[in-house]
Amino acid sequence: MEPRQRPAGEDRMTGTIRALRAHRLVGPEALALDEIAPPGPGPGDLLVAVEAAGVNLADVAAVMGARRPPPAVPFIPGLEGAGVVLAAGENVRDWKTGDRLCGFFPSGSLAQQALAPANLCVPLPRRIGSDVAASLPFAHAGALMALRDRAHLAEGETLLVLGAGGHLGLAAVAVGKLLGARVIAAASGEERGAGAGQQGADEVIDTAAKPLGEAVRLLTGGLGVNVVFDPVGGDAFLPALGAIASGGRYVVAGFAGGQPGEINPAVLFARDAQLMTSNVMQALSHAPMRALSALASVVTWAAEEKLSPRIAAKFPLKDARHAIEYVRAHRATGAAIVTM
Image 1 (cartoon, rainbow, N blue to C red):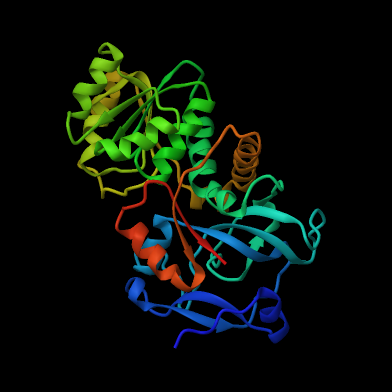
Image 2 (cartoon, helix red, strand yellow):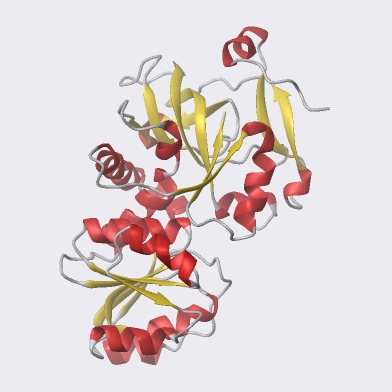
């Protein structure tokens, strides 16, 4: 029987919180809404009353047992979120109870309370809703790290964004425009491509109707694109690689469409091009200052209404399992958000 909904204050008084937990790494069917003791902040941690959390393909991979190394069960998914500080751990100096924040979580944001590293959180202005803020860390800050910090996308260059109908692709479109690029968005189907246009894409390619390479050649006068942002992989990889310009950069940001085919280094060599990756999870571990800088930038842009993230679906915590299923099915044309 589903536990009854209770106000957050009542949960704190009784010493329990509600959390979505995976008990086996076999998929969404092994997720359950459990009542557990709230976590305690360690040194450098913030205990956060989560108001909204984003759901990503990385969460799907974790509950499917496809993340390496796999998490120990039971575990709580959720890698990003927004909320209010309840307590700060030892050595935390710049945060106090009641502060609003947006941040990266090592796990656990699909719960009423969760721990976030203080060095991976930024203050959240009142003008930004928690649901919007929860959509920013992995997609928008991740896209900024990929495009600005790895590919060094410059103003006036041409950017090709694959998978531009999904949350990460839409974020890359919006971030690319803010960096001053001409953005060509590639999405399968007119409906998914419409979202890219709303996020500022200069041109949209319907890959269900026209071959990607041919369309890019026509749009660039045969010159190709300076940067490719690819969260898809799979069958899209080789045509997009063939569309890269001389001196171009190809950023692999995920494999939503599966692993790409065999890479021919001669294609890169012929164009003096670079192939690189941008892995948000690795950046959180090895370059936290870069991740924090990117998150601060996108939160500022959202506060200034330069970014308007698209939220495709919202789910209450009691239905958070369905949010995992929704993202797993690649149905989202924007962020999937769980509210507490």
